[in-house]
Image (cartoon, rainbow, N blue to C red; front, side, top):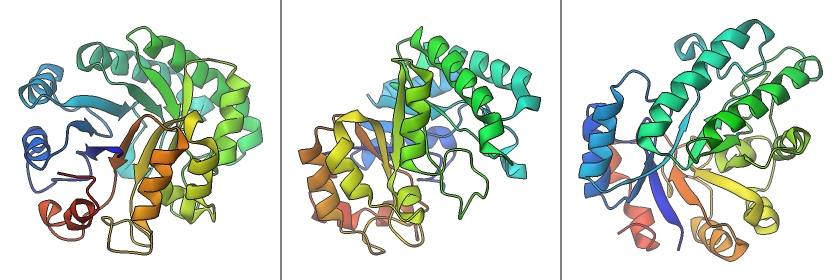
Amino acid sequence: MPRLAANLTMLFTEYPFLERFDRAAAAGFTGVEFLFPYTEKVDAIYNAITRNDLHMVLFNLPAGDWAAGERGIASREDHQESFRFGIFNAVQYGVVLQPDLINCLAGKTADAKATRGILVDNIITAAEQVEGFGATLTVEPVNTVDVPGFAIPTTQDGFDIISETRHSNVGLQLDIYHSFKMGEDPMAIIRERGAELAHIQIADLPDRHQPGTGTVNWQELFDTVDQSGYNGWVSLEYVPDGLTESGFDHLRELGVLG
């Protein structure tokens, strides 16, 4: 049975951020992740994790001006100083919070071939830094339907970048929503390469809501994960349709959430 984690940036948004840890634990989650911790005091996050006996799964490196539409700066030659400061900032939080994974969003680029060397070098630099406190760096393919120009749009692109880094501390984060949007079959990917994946995130199709609201066969997906050799967490990264806590019925029916 997959270990489910709650993404607290996406779920329980009816509550202040630090209260979401309590709500996640009460709903039966034992692991959490979030996009960015950097607007909160690290000790406050640590206390929210420990008082609920939660496992810290993942957070992202700083990714530029999110509100303005940036989705990472690792491919940006004009953001090298900001990227390196972002690594420094992530390390300060990571040392305290001890996540399994730190995710690096490649961001948008007008010319993926021209910026590829910058991206590879930045991934290597980040991987070396987060390894110091025991985390694995992940790279995440993001679909170019929702985010035109994203530098790593497909799963194979992600694996190719990882191969180019030749670094043992870089893994792939597979978000099945992004994979489906790119016309891939994420179940086949998990079946064939599950043991190579560092992290999996899920949402239903087509509207990125909770499992049971769309077209994904969730029993098949969870069975595939169980049989694939994947040993990480499966994180819920979706936009709830309605109140968060009323959206877990299908997961409970399947027996993957208590």
